[in-house]
Image (cartoon, rainbow, N blue to C red; front, side, top):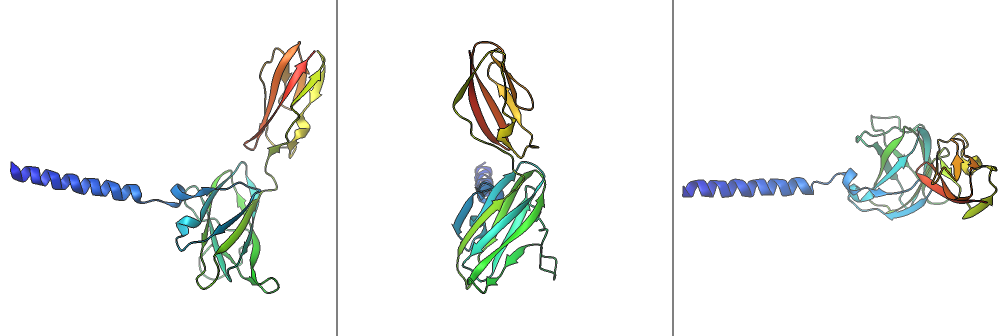
Length: 224
């Protein structure tokens, strides 16, 4: 009986150790820091590439541009999709081997690594990872740009119209072909069509909200 208790205790300890090891085995999906398309970032690279991983999302099939600038002589970076598959750039310049990562070299005029690269991506989440170049610096500046990113322009707080009037809000969306969701908080006061045309139905107050590319803008319509 005593032997069985000892064996059980040992097994329990092994199981607990196994669980703790599994829980601490982080991946880039766990540690990636969120960044936004269109914003500029500066980071200090460490020897652990897990620390140098960033996550961003594209809202529709598009081609993005990643602009890079570093004090390193040779800057390596990698782009993965949500399944961990490494993406190939449209203008990849390394011809030898099967490596699909891209690197930027010294710019002789400015004396630091600087360049840009394009990727054709489908809608989804992606992971940008940098590798520190030994013997060089450790500063990386980057910006991810998407010329097709949908957005809505901020609206004024409120506007007053007369009953029966119409108002076209479609112009606040860029690009004009972007998919937009329009919503009225009270359709008995104000209705809004799928193209952003507002119609005043009866006296009162309602909020019109437009959502595109994960961004939202709203305006309060007061009907006399």
